[in-house]
Image (cartoon, rainbow, N blue to C red; front, side, top):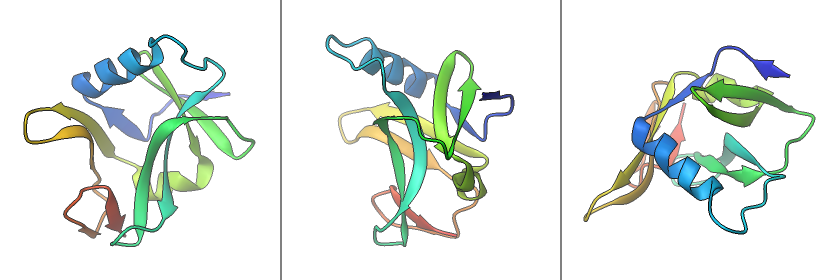
Length: 113
């Protein structure tokens, strides 16, 4: 079931990169884009962004024309987060701007609430 309000947003560059990844030859179309968190990292929690199997604990969301899944309990940590993609000379990869994070680490992929 698709939930109307997306808890996270994506910049145009993040949307473009995710679409590029999904259109690569050999991409497993049975996988869904997953946004979430897991324990670990230098600040206590680490962001999850990748392609994975949908589970019974997931809700499905849509942002513009991108559909993704997220564990129902992760919305508490991620509501209002913005995901960006940087392809510069000094940094390349996805970045996360999370208004719920009380502390982040230097790498930008770990946080605490």
